[in-house]
Structure formats: C-alpha cells, structure tokens
Length: 307
Image (cartoon, rainbow, N blue to C red; front, top):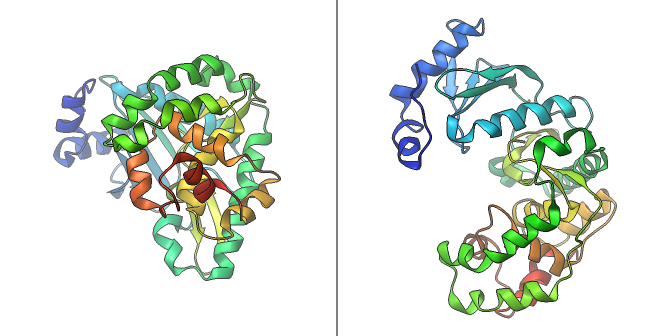
C-alpha cells in the first residue's frame, strides 16, 4: 500500500503526501485490528505520526529510517514504567511492507509543553522544569548495558572524533557566519571531553517539544520520541536541555540542574552542542538570547551556565 522510500527525493514526494500516506495508515490499522479508527495526522515530527482515536498513536518509519523504528520500540519497551513520568507503552511493532516499519503505542495525556509553555504560571513553569530534571536524572541512572549493542554509537571516542572532523562544515552548511566558524576548531581543541565517560541512556533530543504537560495542574505527564536514542555521555543530553527546555531564561537551568542532581561545565555542553548530530548553531542563535560578546566562551556562559 505504501511505496518504498529510500532517497530524499522519494521522501519529499511521498511522506508529506496524505493522499498516499493516509490509505497506507488506514490499511495498517485494519491489519492491527483497528478498522475504521479515527486517524488524525500530527503536524509536527520528522516521521509520519497519527493519533488513532483518543488513546493510541501510530508512528510510521519508511525504509530510509527503518532502523529508527526498531530503536524507538526497543527503548520504549525497556523504559516502560521506569521513569517518574509516563513514556508511551508499545502495543504493537514490526514490519509493514516495502521496507516500512511501525510502532503502535499509547497516546500520552496532556499537551506538548512547547505550545503550552506561555499558558503556564511562573510557579508551574518552575515545577515543570524541576520535574523534567528529575525525569532526565532517572533516565541517566538506568543501566544502559542491555541496550548498548543495539543503540550505538558503540565507540564514544570514535563518534566524537567523527563529529569533530565535520563540525565546521556541518555548521557552514547550515549557514553559520564566518566569524563564528573560525572559532570552532580552537574552541573544540580547548575542551577536554571525556573519552570514556560514564555511559548513560541518552534521549538526545530532550526538549519541550517531546514533553507533555497538564496545563491546569502544572505537572509533566510524559516524555516521548526516543527514535534517536543513544548510549553515551550524560552531558550530551544537556544540549537539548539548554537550547530547548531552559532556553537561557534566568533561573531555569539552575532549577533543572538542582533537580537533576548535578551540572556540567558550560564549555563542555557547548562543545557537545557543536558536535551534536542535529546541531544547527545559526538556528539556535536566532532563537536564544545573544551573548554579551560574539565569541563561543560568552555563548557557553549565556546558554549553559546555571544562574
């Protein structure tokens, strides 16, 4: 029912096209014993995702990202009931056709924290940030050994070396100004990242967009989207925390770090920001407050220093 998707061109032609995607999602729901289910596609997300009624979510992965579907199901099954807030429970997962995979899971209660944030009181924002810190601490405290050989990157030092080798060109391709680009090599050389860190299960995109909240109660209700999960240095997850959760808002990173039970050096987190798989420093510079001086040390303090 769904055509094979392996290239960027095929992705652009097929994945956004509901005249193609919806019949496939409906057919898969029939096969899963959910004929006639009310399907509503979510606007956000890198993969096609549908609400199936009020209680379930169907996430689809084309051949080009089939491994992400395997990873997501694996991590969700590992996490079930083990964090302070719910994660989606997997109801079914497997192969569909033409290389597509799927995960049918619980729909979390509440709404996405990102659009809900402006409607939270200051006290509730503080509470939610603290609960987020406790949640990330619990994730990092889990033994990642059962997943390490399935998630990667395996050799953390080799992963960092590869990311470091492409750091300047990665940011240049995203449109970063030359005055910032020329600072990257020296800055990365000056930060001693742990070659063999204490391994932890990483979400890698711990952000408001992947947390759900009960606005009226001012409490977190869930954490989702584990398709890019890895095993590595816990500090790597603080990129998402600083850029997407606390966003350089006064006092928030200090609250988050206290609830987490520790903090990481701002320069270390900025180094991971430059090395992150999905890093886009030009976008971050547009979204977050500008540092007092146009240099990476000032940027590290402005975005990642608890204060």
